[in-house]
Amino acid sequence: MKNRAAIYIRLSKEERQQKQGSLQMQREMLERYAEEKGFSLAGIYCDDGQSGVDFERPAFQALMRDIEAGKIDILLTKDLSRLGRNSARTTDLLDEYFPSKGVRYISVNEGVDTQAESSANLIAPIANAVNELYARDISQKIRSSLYARMEAGQYIGSFAPYGYRKSNKEHGKLERDWQAAAVVRKIFTWASAGKTPAQIAEKMEQEQYCTPLEYRRSGMILRSQMRQYRWESGTVRKLLRNPCYMGMLVQGRTQKISFKAKRSKSLPKECWRVCMQAQEAIVSQEMYTQVQRMLAGRRRRPRGGWQNLFAGIAWCADCGARMSSAQSGGHHSLICGAYKRRGKDACSSHRLSYEALLEEVEDKIMMQLQTASVQKETMMGNLWQQLQAIAKTGQQERKRQQIYNKLRHLYDDKYSGKITEELFLQLQTQYEGELSGINGALALQIKMEEQWQCWKKMAERAWNPSALTREMLLIMIERIEVAQPKADLPMEITIQWKKRSRQESLLPNGLNV
Image 1 (cartoon, rainbow, N blue to C red):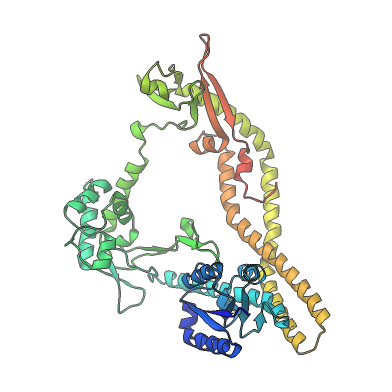
Image 2 (tube, rainbow, N blue to C red):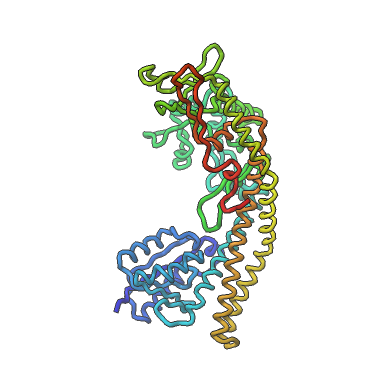
């Protein structure tokens, strides 16, 4: 009989802080259980400080590799929450993955055993759902705590910005790091004198200054050995744009898309947490503002004060090269890129007045938008009605909590003999069906609320036919082809529209209008 047993133990940072058990207690309990059952110990896998929501835990991944290699017959955990706090993923492991690999899973505290005809197995889906609810609740509490600290002007980052250090006396407070602060002032002084980020990076290399990462690791301002990292223009630009150097603390620029996911999304400026005079400034507000203007001027100024809206959109129909801009006598035109590079042996010029192309494309786009504007009010009205209908699910979170409570009481009633097995299964199916519907409604509500305002602003801007913009061209037009006519006629212009119309491309996925 196969009895090679693996022990998996886990403790999150939050559980450790709240002193909810220990890894040693889990290990001793599971070792005693394995010994009592006569299992041979194949290995102990320990994840310390790892969240149960994340299944990319180092020890858990090592466990999965050994299961794939056929080294494990039995997996032991203290309870289901040690395995994970993502209900769907944990249930899939129990119902699909472990059986397919011939692995017997045992949750000692709850009595779940995937190879035994145990009534405790019936509660596994409920326990997984409750474990996920716990993780969601912890995530919300942590987020609320972080927001409160941001509002109070406390710094929540893992590492202090270059030029500062975390205070040992006052939690969440940044203090000047005098030697690094002097370097920051020097960088701002150079920038205010007109040096570009690339020139400043080169000067920092010449003077052998450690990069912010090198300084954090070594504590040395100047390099004493061969350099590991180079100063790059991006490093300098990021430093120059950081408002912390004029005493302002800006946090909360991003937010995780879900407590289950690692990926974050950028938040609009109105959602950022800003605290003025949160720490001692390294440079004056006047110098910081001056440097921002200089950076913005370099970034936004089009070459020659003119921008080609058709770059990457207009193509030569005869050779397939991109149409390139040209200027003569103050007038702009487009010519075949192959002709511009290699002359008439590559292709003919296909010279076309930029203003003529702009006028023709603008006329055709306006015709498209005038047709679409007839549908505008109906579309906006229908989409808003959908959002309002879904918004009524605001009470669903409370209902979900109530169903979780019902499921827990149902389990208690079943094992106390108050209800029959048949009624238990019937009510369990009913409650889980209701729970599934509520989870779907909540997910859609969050998605709709986040996308509605963005969609409305974009739609209003796109349906306003007052000006042709680069954004409008990219969204509406797939490609413009310019062909050389055989006779002495104007250039032939063909517009290929995007397959999805402008209004469709703005709609969030899954919405109908």
